[in-house]
Each structure stands twice: as C-alpha cells, then as structure tokens.
Length: 570
Image (cartoon, rainbow, N blue to C red; front, side, top):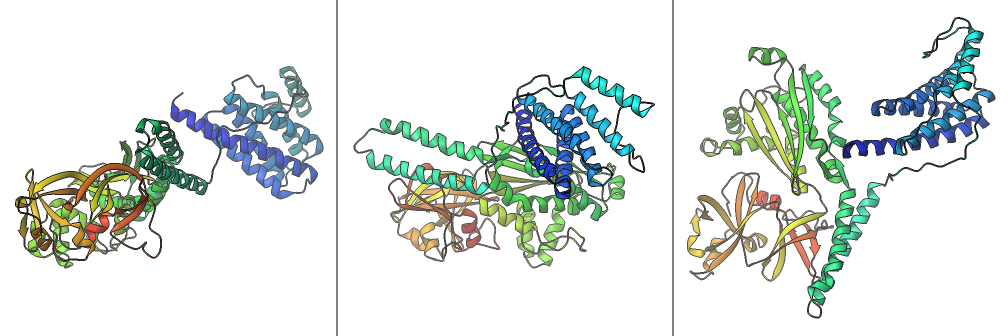
C-alpha cells in the first residue's frame, strides 16, 4: 500500500470511528424516546455518509451493513414503519458488527456480517409488508412465500453465525487526532520563540563554551520546529478537488465545454498559504475559461476538439511549491495587449514598443486592465487579476506567464512551502541589521565604483551582460530622490557590496554597507500602527537580542516605480 493510500485509509478510519460512536450514542437516545425524529434523521444521514465513504474506499462489507441501516432509518424517518424494542436488539447487533468491520481494517481478521445483514433485511421487509402498501426496498433476497422465505432465511442466519454470542466491549480509537488550526498556529509561535531564545543562548555563550556544546540543543529545537511545520502541511488536492464544480459552472456560463485535469495532487504545502491563494486560483481558472478557452464552434474551425482543457498541476522544488494553471485555448495576443495599454493611457507608443513581451503580459495584473471588448459573466471588468498579484505579494510568491498563440497559456505561481520560516540574507546598513528573503535574492556581487554609471537620474551597472539598476537602500529609507549624491561620497577605488533581487522579471541591485550571513528566521508580522509600512514585511529577533526588519521586495519595487519597468526613477 502506498503512502497516499495509507493516508486516505487513516482518514477514512478516523471518520468511520466517529460515525460508529455517534451511531451508538444516537441509538441510546432513540431507544429512550422512539418519537425523537431528530435522532432518526441524524442516524439516516450518518449511515448514508458511511455507506458512500466505504464504497469509495472499496470496503464493501461496511458499505452493505451501513446500507441496510440506512434503509431501516429511512423507512422510520418517512413514517413507513415504527421501530420496536425487538428491532433495537438487532440494530445494536448490527452496530457492533459495524464496529468490528471498521476495526478489522486496522487489524485484519474475518468478521461475519451477512447473518445480521440478512436478519435486518427480513425484519424491514416484514414490517413494510404489514403496512397498507408494500413499498419495495433494496433487497437481494428472493422468495415465493413470505413465511417460508422468512423461516428459511432465519435458518441460514443461524447456520452462518451465532447472533447472541456475548463479546467483551471494546473501545476503538483513531490513529489521527483532529486539531484546530488556531492551536497549531499557537504551537508554531511558541516554537518560534524557542528558536529565537536558542539563538540568543548560543550567541551569548560562545565566548565561554564551544559551539559543539550547543549542538544537541540546536538539533532538537530544529527537529521540533520542522516537525510542527510538517503537521501544518496538507496535499494540494485539498484545494484542487474543489475546482470540478467551479470549472463546470464557469464553462456553463460562458457556453463552453471544458474538462479539468489535476496533476501532482500529492504535493504538500502549508495550509495557511493554500488558504491565501485559494481566491487567486479561482480567478486564474475562471480567467483561463473566460479569456483562454474558445467557444466550441471556434475550436472546430481551428481544428481542435470542441472541449477545452484546464489543467491544475503542482510540484515542489526545495522549499518552493510551483502551481501551474494551464489551458489549451487561443493564447495571449501580445500585440493586442500593447494596443490596449496605449489606448488606456498606461503606456506611451514609445514605451509600448520598447517593453519586452514578458513585461507587456504582466500588465494584465494591473487594476482595471482588460483586453475584452465586451463584458461577460467572467471577464471584461478588469477586476480579479490584480487581486492575484496582491495575494502573491503578501506571502512572498511570484507569478510567471508562458503563452503561445493558438496553443494556450500557462500561469506559474511560485509559492513558499511555509510562511513560518524564511531563509534570508542578513546585511548591515548604518550599523543596523536587515534581512532580505532568499526567495527574491538572485545573487550577491562586489563591484568597483568605477563600474557604476549614471543614466538620467538613476544608477546602473552591467554584470555578465545584463544591465542592472542600482539603489542605495539608505536613500530609499530617507526618501531621497537620488542615489547619485550618495555615490559621490565613496572613494573612487571603493568596492561596493550589492544584493541583486529579482521580482516578476525586474532586477534591481541594492547597495548595502556590509554583507553578513544567510540565516533561517522566524518572521513575525508588524503590529499596529506600523503594519501598513510597505517597505517592511515583518520582523524577527536575532541571537544578540536585536530586532531585525525583513524587507518587502515587492513593496520596495512598487514604491520605487509604478509606471516604469527595468528603470528606476529616483
């Protein structure tokens, strides 16, 4: 059995044991008050659910017992029969057998169940036959005469198993425990505090003790941290499987035929990240149907099948999860995007001609931007895609587009697998320590002042054939409009440390005072009244007890420029 099959089995067991315990509780309530219709309704729903789950997992014996119990409580619920004291004896017996069958999944053994199943079927048929109208039910048993059939079936029951055998009562417990997400968040916060305190202890004790003396503390705390993070991981099919209905409804509104395909559903990601991107995924899927997939008649004209396909695919790379939203539609008409950008006044003719195809495609994430000439139920309003961008920025994710006219478009979302721990690069600026997430850090370079050039009112350098805009972070924090004056203060032969960051195709080099080290940190969100500062994403505490601000690369680059790309106007 694969790991995934074991996981599904454990989930089924957890729910089945809960269902079994609830059936027993409700039976005791109903036995005391046979007119309690709420308990009857609840018993019907639980047995119906258990039957469906067991059938889906291939546990036919459980499904058969649950099915006859469902039929019985369904008849009681509809008022076709009245449950009697004699019936309760057999129903309790059926519940006991149901519990044994559930337990046998975990500890395989032969459990006889056909006898009690047949007895309940006979009892139900007899009770229904005594009513004014004999209503047929699910019953595989065939017979000519009622009394002869009942007698022969009861003989079969007694021959197959002893129904009145006394057994010691046992309680079943699931191997899974359901824990509220808030408790996991609190536990992770406590582990974060532990890691910060560990770093402080190690930093303060290195002068008196060797690093080896702290190795066990470091290992145990790290194992605890990653164990807690692992508990928060869920497979992406937790979200993907909800899109069958979304795709169906969206295609119906657009009068299109669309099939959904899921790939890599076993890929795991932090539940909180999945929750943050859920709306974004909905927008992208609807966008693929509204903008990407053509109408059936149009697809036939292009020699395609009438039905289009939207694919959701996930895979992981190190500490990054990549989710791809792919359609086999008409692709993005980049020339049309350029014209729309000029018509809407977003770009000048010169800018539109100079921007790369990638830069032009990223315009679809601008608020209010749409290429549709007429509004439909899913597209044309220019809303939704900017929400995608903001959601990804908030968790340190990025998005990339690949398209081919006539063949389709793919959106690639790169997401951190966890929001709790960030790999960062620490650096010094004006004797203060800051952190840049490594997910945005492209490279670290050292260049001479003579290799930095001024263009218009900005700074650039050329590294390995690529032109990189430069910015002295100290000037940004002081709201200075130019880094050129700061550059003049450096010695002509000075060598400057530069952190090159990349975000949605934009490369910018940050000039810093001193590079320190790479470090995994526990990032805490900013609290009021500074929670709205766009340049900072959060804060952490270093081993020396000092507060370290974590830079928000999306926030910084958006602050630098809203209209220009690959140029920085300071």
